[in-house]
Length: 464
Image (cartoon, rainbow, N blue to C red; front, side, top):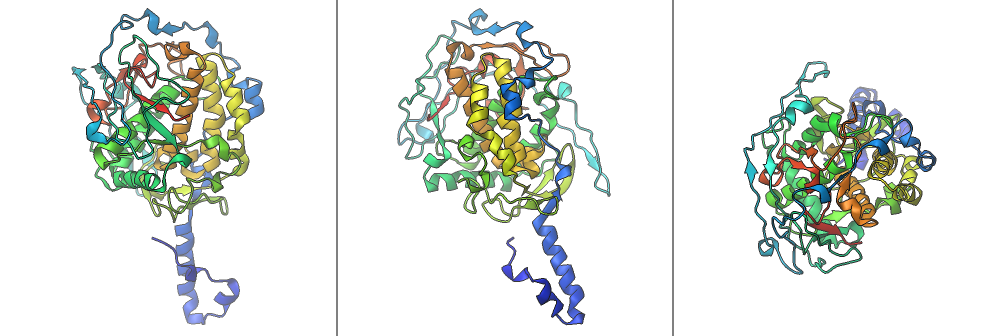
């Protein structure tokens, strides 16, 4: 639904309206205000973040001795000399049917279910979500599977600056799919991408992530349910599963777009750092694609009324709330988005250990990107309700991949905290759970299978 310009009436014009129409006009203007203005900003909270200066001074590491934790290496694994499959990769000008498909097997997989939460007549919520511990109780021992994505006209499977990773670990892929930066996409590719997301919004929920009302909300509900396990509680209570979990989560989103909505192009990513301080001017936040990025009005976020997701209504969030209808809404703060530029990028890329890099990313350009877009994106728990979430986390994954490429050992070793409460060591055997959101393609997997995007379960890279 779009709001007509005719509804915007000045105070002088309103005063000229006959008395018998004043009440009707007032009600109409209140309806328009309610449509345009979203919830107060305080409803969403903020994603944990620190300043660039604090990142440079390493304040995100105060009180935490990650260096004392053991480092787990693929070289120590019995899988080191096993190659389980050749990963699938698109060929130039090819399509989904042309791509080689890898097979996957599960041993004793059981469904994981998500309980509902109840909402009373006042809108407050009694959360009855299962704990992440219960949701994660059914681990599936899985061999590898891989993407079989089709390619747009701009796709090329020849190597760019990265080079293909070739090693003896399980699941080496020789022809990875390429993710292209948004501005390198043709207009038709951009349209196909947002159309595919809209397809998920219009598709029925799977029924496994109740009370999600559509397939897109399945992803919002999954993130909401697992959020206590996949986000750090503070700079001194961290989980270093965060980047790894979101890498798998965004990959799963890609699989569902392809398998259920026919998306047959290369996958996009967004180079967020080049828009630092001017997110509202970026080429994703436009009336053609993800919709505009307005500032707050009277302390409220603004409902998005243009773009492919204009008028989108959500029922998961804010926070752990469910069955609460609210619009897709944003409230940009460019002072915050300015923190996502090269200074924070360089500060994080200079970190030399995985936990140090991870905490820097989570608390700098990751947190600032969420908070800068504002509204639903500032809600750490239900932020996937804004489709731009996935572009933001594709940038985070891009940063992770680039950091790994600076040192080959970063593709095969891991350390840090698996959980934020007790800091149990994160190892290659630590399991990442996605609730099988993309079916057999999304089994519960150990870190060793997702640490490298061109070895193990995945077969993709970035165009630069």
